[in-house]
Image (cartoon, rainbow, N blue to C red; front, side):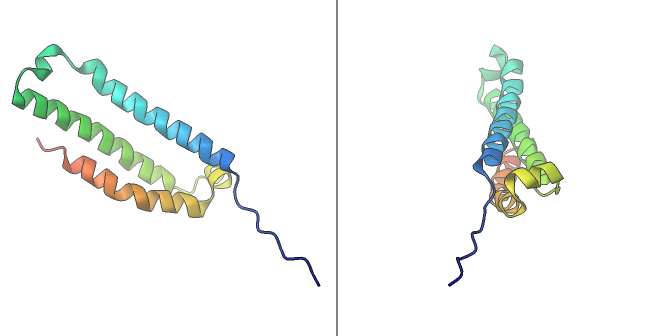
Length: 106
């Protein structure tokens, strides 16, 4: 009897680094919004709505850029994470990206 062929999957180390980088980028995007908020931005309903609109626009744009990055077929990213996993992430990220951008209505 021959021994069954073992299928090696991509390591989780690439996934961990990708999640860390993408989470850090989202944190920087949110920090960009928080550093520009003034007290006058939270004084009325319209100001609150405008601040929320800016926040959803920033997050939606960041997620759109990440979505493009996930399917860009960058060799070192594909080697670390794997193309099948990147496409799955891209497919799962799409509705969230769209919903965040729809929250931006000015």
